[in-house]
Length: 444
Image (cartoon, rainbow, N blue to C red):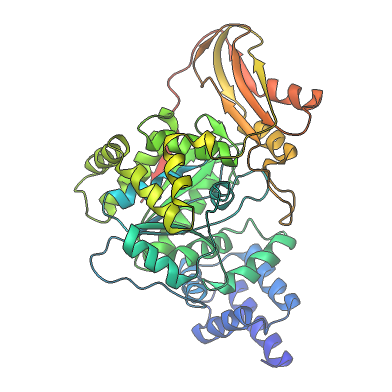
């Protein structure tokens, strides 16, 4: 693509966006091809991204952009009944749903070819959690993903250049041009990769709150509606569940520790908070595919496979299919702590006063965990899998002074600043609130 032609293309597209006119299909195709094949300069791509960031895109143009990005790489093809499903979360603290959701859905007869990401910033990534399991291989090409799903029912693979390659460069440039928070661009980035999995149904978990990307319900609702409209426009039955991300999810925060809690839930135990989210997301997917006639029936089926061990069996099958040694996978199912790395130190912190827990600040805990090595400040940083927290108490629980509320799993010394920040993350009042509800809104 010549430089003059490239400049003319970007100018035409920007003019259309500013004048609120539909983008030309041929221009959009040429743009996506130029991005995927690295024929367009970064400067020209920046100009277009900033134009979208400032002026927005229509639903139709967002859908067309998403479809083009989806088709810029491999698109998985499936035969048989329409039971290929997945979920996407916008990221949170203690958000380990994928580790339980994929095998639970597989145990319910679904096919789950899940692409997932690594953590960046304060949010943990599904791939980092799984890579704390010895031998677990997340680097699967599309052909191997399909083979594992057809034999096991589910896989969880790292995003790679074979799927939606146009998104890779666009995302990297968005990250350095302050255009990350553009709703059409977020929509196209997320939905293009999910659509490339060849899905029939998708549940979107849009987090909302202090420790979420979308801080307010209004922002979360705007993104949820955009993604639902776009995914439905591509023929994927889609529902968004907007969930609270002020409080951490479940009891364990940190990569290996979240694997431990996931195993507990797959054993039919674990925290009610974590289990409820898995049941809610998976139950909705069973309803969307018509596998269950109602949402309630879907939730009941998911609870059954969590309680009877079938979801745990699928998780172990998936681990083995993704190169975890058989003896490691089998031991993981029984006693995960014996398989996963353990921190050098565990420090307990106690409740400063009696009363009821009103709130636990997820963002404060995430920031300390990241500084202790559980997360990244840059993509090149190496995650320390064993670092994190185990919460022994939950919101609205009655507590007494001196009671342990959190275990800090760390290798580096715990500074007084860190200890103070952890202690101030808990708010205690003298009266209890109504029961905490994680689900805020459903967008269909």
